[in-house]
Length: 197
Image (cartoon, rainbow, N blue to C red; front, side):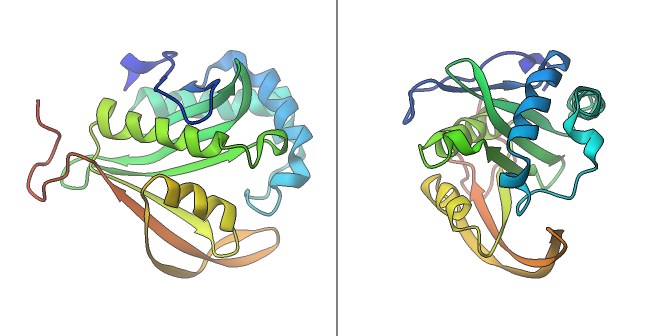
């Protein structure tokens, strides 16, 4: 994974100007400002955060952890760029190798970019990273059952709903049910562990 550090992933786009790249320590100030501006908007969907998380120092700590996990190939932590500015985050989490070859995806887009196809395009590009660069076989995602917008983003990218996990995540002060979605690699033939050479 580390060979991809800092390289943008750009494909023919549904939403012009959207691209992804791996997070960098230099993103701390921009991410702190973006998280701060979107704190209330993200509250229903994000884990509870201490006030320090929304500071530059808090983001430096967070980025340090993300860069470390990227270096050990546990995740692919990305930022979503719109016309070169950070507009959100997308992460391929819990990368599992061996017989699973899978990960979970999580993402968010700032309120100013919501409803414009940015998340849909960012996820499309992240799937290219997962299935091509990382050679994974499956990407999974959970969304709160009431997060219809996120479910539409997943469905537009070929994800299939698998089922519902009861009281799966504690967000915004209580436990919530979540729907599990999955997407198999386009090269899946039911036999091969990794894509053909």
